Length: 73
Length: 398
Image (tube, rainbow over all chains, first blue to last red):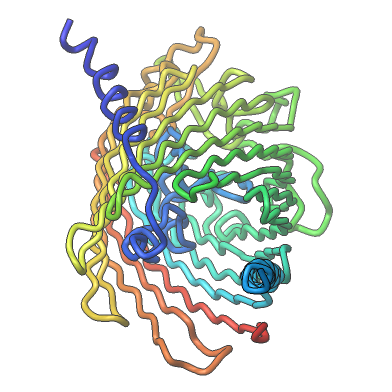
């Protein structure tokens, strides 16, 4: 029973984290505006995700490949 | 009485002035050009090549240079990318068992062009683009359409992107005589194994990011994908348990779903952790989960060290079985170990260099990433990527 509830508890925790946050003033954004804090994936990171998308039978939700290709080598 | 008029007049004038200032700041338009040169080098070895039925070398070297140009002017952004992966592969050489045959050296050339338009008032950005990818045995035509919306308080972003790839798996584009047929292993060319050579992919990617507080950002990402057409690779052999052989057979439809949660945390003055959990499921029976961490350690204003770690575990596809274990009576079969049960880990190290105070148009950022990758069935790989970014700002002071 506890195992079944775990994903829902995790979702609830994420939901409560997301909903409870208050707005930040411009001067409070020093850390969140840092280049390293951004969610986007760089070109060099994207090459790694491209390798994983070929060598593993799955797909990642982050770092999607932008171009097509066989990946059959 | 006069004083009252004077006060009202001054207030009206200051309101007018502040409005004029806002209009001036709103009309300030970005005008800059970014150029990025990337080189990736990839070395791989293993003993489970699908070309030889699940046994045999997977030795591979990829030399991957690429160039990208991003031009921002006003509310418009044009992004152009051109690249190639030159692939020296011992496994695909075994399609026809002739050492140093044409299949030993292959190349994937690709290009993408995207246009984005930013609507400042509504904090909305829309983008669209096309892309091509060309290999000797593969041609892919991609189309992209997306939008990103930022909330009024700049605390949340919502993004959606639709990708469509229309692919053609026929061989012969780089040989000069054009695409004419699917390429099968040499001993299996006595018949046509498939009645289709198209593969279409439809991907929908959704993203949501939220600033939690001054030091935490969380992102939820998901992707659903439908593939249809020829999903098997024509030159993958399958060796059956009765000694006969055939080419790989897979269903003509594949549905994929994936969800990821990413958490970026600025721990102290100089340490940022980026952690991701990604789960995946599809109708081939593959179930996977990955745990990923990258930590950025800022040594000073210019140098950042980036160690990283990733663990991935996967359940095998219901169509996978190793060499000489498939029954020839099965409808679908593959011995491609990319669809087998395994765990992988990746350890990496990178560094970023931002040479502040340089001349406009000179080097803006230098990035290097190395990783070692190991799969529990013996495949291992080394990868090194280097990126040089240049930025030229043509903005004039308002």
